[in-house]
Image 1 (tube, rainbow, N blue to C red):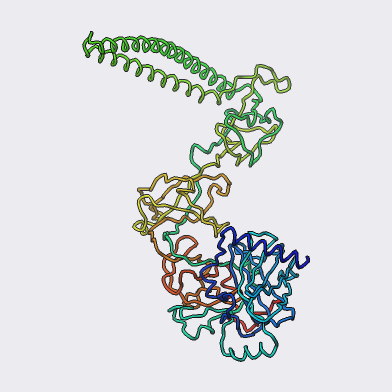
Image 2: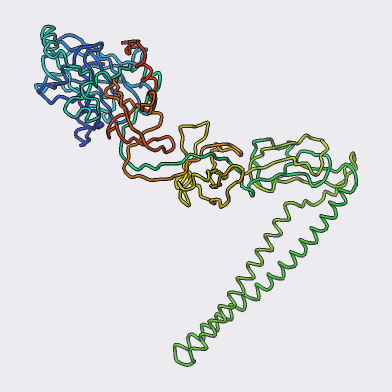
Length: 594
């Protein structure tokens, strides 16, 4: 890309961001890393001691971390910038971003550079040549997108190698290495002047291999919880065992195949057909049962017809009562009749309406009873089967909607009437039973909030109440004499089918709420022989070891009482690898491929 095009893109992008009034903010911890120099002035951090990688800067912009290391810049000489872009959500490098970089002095001197793609180690390496001595403010744009302009820290250009070496000699003895400066750099955390011994260098390449992640420590609401064993249970109306009502040979439905385990079935769907092989007691019983059902259905139909007739009469009574009420109301307003006649008319209307409502409820009960009986009774097929000489068939239907979890059906197989062939389970909503020790009952409330954690997804805490869409069914009142536990049952949705019946899981019951507490994921905590440690990121490749005192645990988070401050960027994934690196004599920067 021509320099004019680069200059135009970056200039337009930067002006668009500033013109729109957008303030590109950085996290609280960044000013402690490398404070940006003001225009025309030199920052103390522009004079980092040269170590393995010379100068460094670390910037966090939204969900992207920018870490740049480079050798001190000499005017007129190209300097390679090793730019590491990390996606903070995944801890992995950004590989497909084109970047443009612009450096400018208040006097108007400026330079631009760009990189279309990173090298094989996922490091971008554009070359920057600064035209004159001084301090340059820098901006970087990602992907030719004016809304993604990142303000970097200042870069100082020396007039010669001799000036640069003299400056380094002047500042020798300082161990900045991208660390915080100022009286409150580490606060009163007990490290004092020995903090350099607590710092750990860990290369970006190693971080990317681990998918290292961090989290900014913040104060907020923290609810401690009690972890208890739980089990997934199927509600009784949501499960059905389906045996044949008569012994005989089982055949597939008209669709030509039996439902398989995992298939979804509807209520009333045909699952199989049973054909009795001989005329015997079973078929006689079946015919007798069907005759009884037909008599019952006829009685229900007769009662339904009688109720419908009474409903029609009641509707006429209401119409008459309404007319009487309106007439008495009009006469009462004219002062022709006494108010007690109006009251009597209103009472008659209310009685008629009440009678109609009662008849409608009765009709609904008859209709529901008929619907409950009908799915289990299939009218006999009067056609004779010439081969089997069997006069009837029994259609096996699913009484509920759900998923087939058991299917023991082979075409033509002889089955007994007491052997369940299918098991159907409605998996949309299930029960979770939490077993709480009688010794822990005092820690929880009468209706505790709860969440659960599956063994297959240990890092995922799923809420039960509130946004979880579940509900508390009951808190047990009886202690199990064998386990000495009390059952707390919740009903939970299961749209994604992650819950399986009889699955074991951890249930996290809320115990105590605190409004102001710092908490971090438990994976951030390391037990070093009884001393609890965490690692705080100070710069792109620099981490500080912190000794902490912790409190209660809530799911996958733990309360930090001492040793951590708001704004500290804590390593939440990969902390143990950093800890192991402190026990090794290997060079922590091995792995760079610049």
